[in-house]
Structures are given as C-alpha cells and as structure tokens.
Image 1 (cartoon, one colour):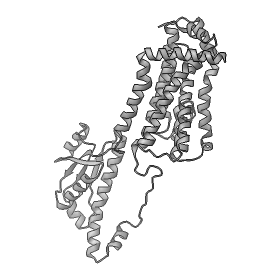
Image 2 (image 1 turned 90 degrees about the horizontal axis):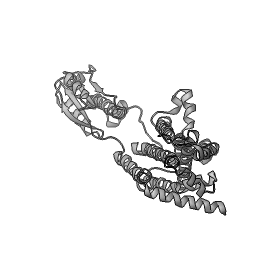
Image 3 (image 1 turned 120 degrees about the vertical axis):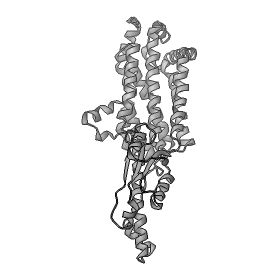
Image 4 (image 1 turned 135 degrees about the horizontal axis):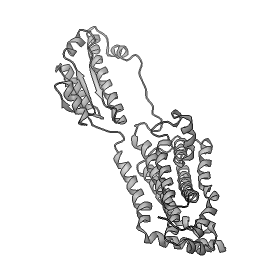
Length: 389
C-alpha cells in the first residue's frame, strides 16, 4: 500500500512536468498525429498514379499513335511530352521531367504488317525503385500489345474465331491473387511499418529524455525522495503517465488505419491491442535501459536515435531480412521494430495464431524487462553524478 501511494505521488509529479514542458506535448501527441496523417495521406491513392513519361515516335502512324494512347490510358502512366529524338528524351529524364520514354523507330508499322519483327525500345530510370518498376510494367505491356494487335488482325483475316485468336496469342491465362492486399496498396504495407517506427522513436527519446532531465535540472534527489528512495517505485511512477499517453496514441493510430482506413486485419482486434501494448512497453523498456547503460542525457538519446533509425532498415519491409548477410540478420533481432513487424505480418495481416510468432512476442517482453539490468546504475547516477552538458 505504501508503494502504491508513492507511485501515485511520483505519477502526479510527472504529470506536472509533462504539462509544464511543451516538448512533451509535441513529441507525445502533436508529432505522432502529424506523422500518422502525413504518411497515410501521402499514399492514400494506394499506388503512384499518372507518373510522367515521354514518347519518341519516329514512325507516326495510326498504329503507333494507338499504342501511345493506350500507354496514356494506364493509371500509373501519363504521356507528358513528345520528343523528336532520343537525346532530348534522355535529357528530359536527367532533368527529372519524365521517368521513362518509349522509342518507336521509323518503319515499325510496316515491319509489323510484314511480320519482320521490328524492335521498339523503352528507357526508364531506376533512381526511384517504385516508379521504375511500375513504368517498366506499363511499357512492357504496351510493347506486347503492339505485336498482339497485329497478330490478332492477321489471324482474324485467316478466318480464326476470337476464342482461337485469344488462345493463340495467350496460351496460358494468368489468374493473380495477391493475398490480403488484392489492390497491391502501398499504403497498407508501408504505413503499418513507417508510422509505428516513428512512434517507437518518440517513445525511445521521450523515455530517455524524461529520466535524463531529472539529472540535468538537479531534480533527481527530489524525484527519489518522492518515491521513498526506491528506484523501482520512482521509475514506475515516472513511466506510468507517459505509458497512458503513448498507449492512447498507439491505439488511436491503430483504430485509424484498421477501423477508418480499413486496412486488412484478419487477425482481429484483440491481437492488434496486444501488439500495441507490447510495442509501447518494449520501447519504454529500451529507453530506460539505454539511459541506465550510459547515464548521460546526450549519449542515451543518441543511442535511442541510432537504434530507432536502424530499425527501419532491419525491419525487413523494404528489403527482405533473409536476403541480407547472416550477421545483419542476427543483429536485426536486437531491434523492437523488427519483432513488431513480424507479429503484425504473421498474426494480424495473415491471421495466423500467436504461437507462430512466439519468438517475436517473447523478444518484446524481454525488451520491456531490460531496465532490470540497469535500474541500479540509474539510482547511482541520480544520487552521485553531476550533469555535464
């Protein structure tokens, strides 16, 4: 009972600190909301649309103009320029006016009609991986449609039925089924990693900052005295108000993406709530551990910043972790965001049972328990260390 009262008094004291310092409001509420709205709005169309492409049409016939119109009709491509030669089209790519261009040499239509297999070329920049990959798909499709149109006309003239023509031109029909993300929405698999990664970054930094400022502003002995000189009580009381704010923000983000934006989540609400809880407590645990490992406000926040930034690379969203070198694959297990991402993919996005992600769940629990190893060092720092800017 005595410890509970002490935790309450420390928590009330912490609420006063949170209220009087605007940095807490911005880093715990304003910036997380801004990040959530920014990323989900930036990718609300699902995929990049109407990316600029150019055309070098030296043939300029009805057939080639029809191909260009079809290219322009694609959702991801928009023909913004016609260039007289390849040099000008290449310069347009270098000046970032277009991402790709289609080159149709003179005599293309004549060669098509006489079955001489003409060559048309397309050039695209891979400076942007997403833009290059999507435009490559469109340009390749257009190239295939050109030969298919001529082949269809030739076969029809020979008396084949439409079904026979279709079978000849496309002997194998492809039936695609993207699991759980049928529209291939970039927002679904990027926002579910980028936004939690930013939220974990804020939790890392605020946790280390709140402990470090006790030493910086010479409030450390007062803090411990309020907790009855019990560092465990002092830490619980300090983290409790922050936990309540962060868990509210985390659940608000999850409600927004899964409830309002209707991101696929066959795993259900309970697993989403469990993942949010594990994410917050593991991030707070790592923030306390970082400060206890190096009881310096500047150094602990630097460690937290580095860990959070590297988490985006090692999470495995942009590049599969199993394709990285073995040492990096092993080091990636030291980042909470990696385990958050795996639990999300296994249990929420794909709907598999929690037992399939037991290793990742235990890893987040271990992160939450890390302060046990450094909490005594924090108490020693609060009582003996002198803050050095």
